[in-house]
Length: 388
Image 1 (cartoon, rainbow, N blue to C red):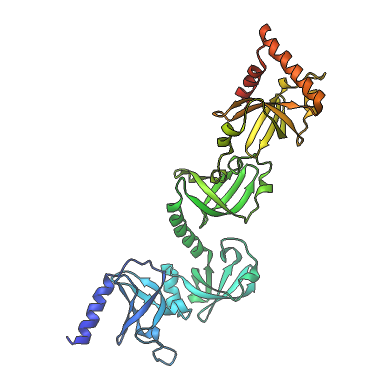
Image 2 (image 1 turned 180 degrees about the horizontal axis):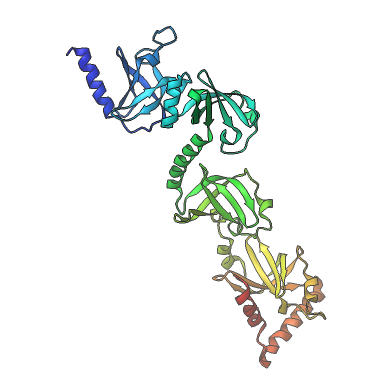
């Protein structure tokens, strides 16, 4: 055996040990040798692939490339070595190659020529193919966005000797998305901070795409330390946001996300900034049958129990003093940091109002001696079953 033959034999042996590639994968490599019938391509990882020399020639039969050139080609076989095809990648495939691609599932390159009834006319090599609207993309898009574009397709129908070709781009995109999703899932672990895109908004929260179609749920209660009045007012589909992974349930394929965890919990400051007896400004956020919830600052909500309001005739007359949205003065009656509860009492405007509140609270305190319980006791009783 001559020296050149020895070299080609060694290269062929090396090609058998090529690193793992998948059939249909488009790869790039450097031509390291060109023989009479086969050329060898360095594809990295100490592996080499082979390609028929005929696929490196132009229409006149002249070589278009030389040793050292980089080319792009598609993996057509991994059995007994890595075999490449450049013509499929360039869209210059023959009918026989297209039929082989149909049976093997090998992607082919095609150009979107124009919109037709029900889909698009696709040019593949010298053949015309049809791609339904539903198969051109994963998401809905305007037909005009695809005109003139060159894509990879999978042949899903090959009939009448190739005169009828139906192709799908969506099938390939979904495969790529599944592969990419597996990669993304590797990085989705509790505690990880990721950037995502709001995919959809619901009353209870928002679904966030973390990449490759992998979605997690950002519940309304996890959006901020303050109560979120309306999710749709806080987030819109398409918004780019940063979230923290809270929980991952692999069995149910559920991912729980949070935004408020990216900032400090305001309750950590309560022991040093709030004291019983303080009068603070608060905003009434909502009314219930047992009292009014008051936001003292973003993330800090207190309860003004119905028992802290002076009698005013009817049982619900107290609520007229503190309509939702109003801002007023509230005196702090109790603080429970562990349970994140603060009890307050509304302080009416003016010196007379403050005096009336003081007198009412004193009467309420003295009533405890008669078995009614202290104001604080009533407040604690109200907070226990109602607040979470």
